[in-house]
Length: 383
Image 1 (tube, one colour):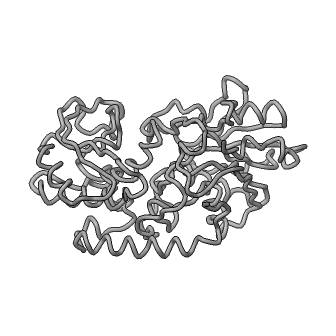
Image 2 (image 1 turned 120 degrees about the vertical axis):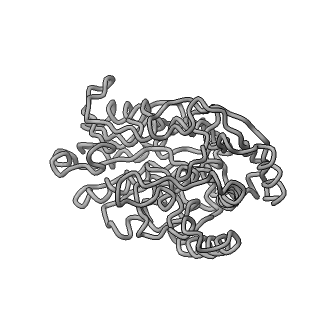
Image 3 (image 1 turned 90 degrees about the vertical axis):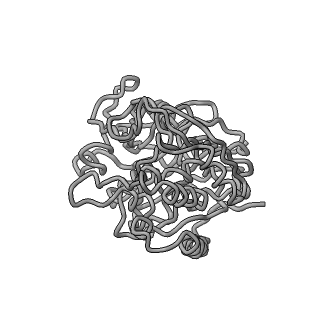
């Protein structure tokens, strides 16, 4: 069994002794025995503050729901929101802290906000120590896929020039980000972890990091279909299998499945599917209570499945089959960027500047570049 950074707390106790500790965490911050990092630090050291990312410290909020500062019911500790008016801790908040620890399960995708919360806190730690309890990349930390984000399209779902599937653990991401931040960084490495491990290979228990990522499989389909957030096609939010269902009321699921399966994309099969999303969020719930036709994404072989290539193929196919109905969603704010630009990390998808084959060639070239560039940041190895 892999030992998480949190499992090795006693071995690294000297880091935390006689320090006033802040902790950035959520409900995934557990050791192998399901003990909370909050409770471990609170019981054994001087934990003084908690910091809450998207979904809150206890994971009780849906995507996009902002939160205010509050008090943790169990420990009585103040909880500072990092997903409200500000996403960085203020200087005042940091005054009575010597060290900040970070323990959150990542999903291996550029779209996910937790690692940018980590980066913002690192930027606020110029005179503090920042410690990452490392955790596995559920997609495995070997394959890199996607384009390097154009910094003009940066946002809280893409803050750094990295590809969608970056092939690093959260600790390795911290090492990469720290090249520019230069805080006093310490990564508590896992023991027994190999880059070629998928999450199920680790012997650890999966705790869903957010409401729409219920299983390790969801991490793969999330990387594939999250780009549909920037379109009028449902990515399956509000269903029992978010990011595995893709569709809209005007899509013929049978015809779309046939078209997609004809591409013979590796490691995936598309099954015609009908689903009715429920209303759970005023802006993210597309087609609530409307029957949608579409497909279910069945990942047959993770070793060859390419989620980014698959997602782009789906996007281009649906756009071409249903030009009368398909559209990219308008910017949330007047004068702002389109959501699809943030999702894809570029403008040329929306602008239809290239054919699909040309885009895939760009993505392949940039993913190789990133993989070569980050080799020296890797702290784990494969067999």
